[in-house]
Structures are given as C-alpha cells and as structure tokens.
Amino acid sequence: MSEIFRPPITKIATLAGHRDAVYALAGGAGSTVYSGSADGMVVGWDAAEPARDGELLARVENSVYALRHVAALNMLVLGHNFQGIQAIDLVSRQLVHATALPPVAIFELLFSETRQRLYAALGDGTLAVLAAPGFRLEKLLRLANKSLRCLALHEERGELAVGSSDTMTRILDLDSLETKYTLGESSNSVFSVAYSPNGASLLTAGRDAQIRTWDVAAGYALGGTVPAHMYTINHLAFSPTGRYLASCSLDKSIKLWDAATLTLLRVVDRVRAAGHGTSVNRLVWPGTENRLVSCSDDRSLAVWQLTVSSEQ
View 1: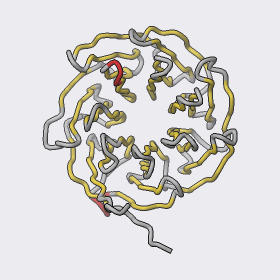
View 2: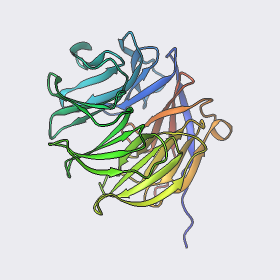
View 3: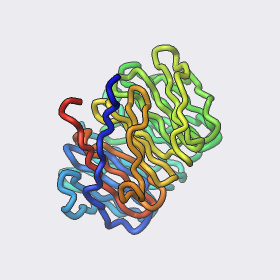
C-alpha cells in the first residue's frame, strides 16, 4: 500500500493593511485576490507577487462580509452590510451599479453565468435575486427565520445550495427557486457549502465543526461525516482541480484534506506554520491549486505555498 503524499505547506507572505477583521475573500483574474473587512475597505492583492502593496478599490461605511468577482462583466460585486450591493468596474475602478437591499447583513454573493443572475444570502433569512448586467433586484424570497449564511451553485443541474443558521441546507431549483431537497443533519448553523468540481458531491460545514458529504446523484443522500475541527468551521474551498479540500476554523487553524477520501493531510496553525493567531474566516485558491490565501480576525491575509510532487 503506497504511502499517502502530504504536501508541505509554507507561509510565503502576510498581507497587511486592513484595520479590522477580514471576513471576505474572492478570487479574481489570474492570481488576483480581493479582500473585504469590518473596516469597510475592499482591497485587491496579487498572490503571485505578495510583496506588492494592496490596491484600495472601495471604502464603504459598514462592514463587508461578501465579495464576488464576475468575470464575464469584469466587475467586482461587494455586499455592503445594511445597505445593499455595489458593483465596481475593474477597468475604470469606478462604482457602476448600486442596488439597495433590506437593511441586514449580506453573508454571501454568488453569480450564475447561465442565468445571468446574482444571488445574495441575507441576514434575515431572505435570498435576493438580482439580474445582470445592471443588478436590478428581481426577487426577495424568504427561506428561513434565521440568517442565510452560504451559497453554492451546480450549474449543470440547475441547483442552488443554501446553508442557514437554522441548521438546514436547502437545495433550490435555480429557475423556479422551489426547494427540491432539505438537508437537516447538521446540529447547528451551516456556514459553508461547496460542490466538488466534478459536481458529484456537496460538502457542508459550520458551527458543529463537522464536514458532511452528500451524494448529489443519489438525491443528496448523506455520504459521511468527519469531525474536522475543534470549533466552528467558517469555510470550505476545493482546489481548482478538486484534488484538495481546505477548511478553516474559529480554532485558528487551516486543514488540508484529500478531497476524494477526506483524509487529513496537513494542519496549518500558529505553532506548526506561523499561522493566524485568531479565527480564520475564509480561503481562496487563486489561479493555481499550489497557492492558497486565507484571511482572519487578526486583520491580515496569509499566502501559503503547497509543494506538490511532480509524480502526484
């Protein structure tokens, strides 16, 4: 039996400049990463050249929990909490659209290329649907009595996964927005939902610190549960090819998993790898699966390099 390859992970940079906790990360074109913070600043960074200073793209009055790069429109959309969404043209660096939403937190933004729609998960349990390219508000759909915290898209099946603080993950039809499946195994808030790149599995995680795998083709049957962290899991992110899964947590750690088996490969924390000193809030794999970016309550971003064997 061959030994499991566990790629070394090295911290290559700390990206500093935010003045408060960093909650939002979004991958952009190439190696670009965008961050949003409780300080209201939205900043662009280059993960391939982390020595370069970040570029301030927006400064808003309230905190920013959600960002989404819309490649087809070359725009960055930000969720301005208690105000609405704002879209920045990445060529002119100007604000080009602003749409008011109910005065609550905006926890996640997701864009469907096939439907040309932006979906926003709101703090009052409402899903907002906005039509591109002008991001006109099309629909407000109340799904839960507690916050909607996370979204994931399965374009091929025309399905939207919505995780909520009421412990439920709902699978909606992307066109009718009717609920097709309700996944109720979680014992607490669901903070992250992620489809595997091949679309075969949905993974969910949250306050109960478990990662659950759901078999999409089998009607979202529960495939397994892994006790993954000590405390709340804030985010799950598959590498671009789907080979690795990264998770991050309130327990201050990042963990790297074999995505196919959920075998733990590496733990990245303060002691082992000069990791974050407080909650790690979000992850993104910019451009290549060999580089990972994290953000934290400690006001910083970190850039991590995976050393992957050529035989792997």
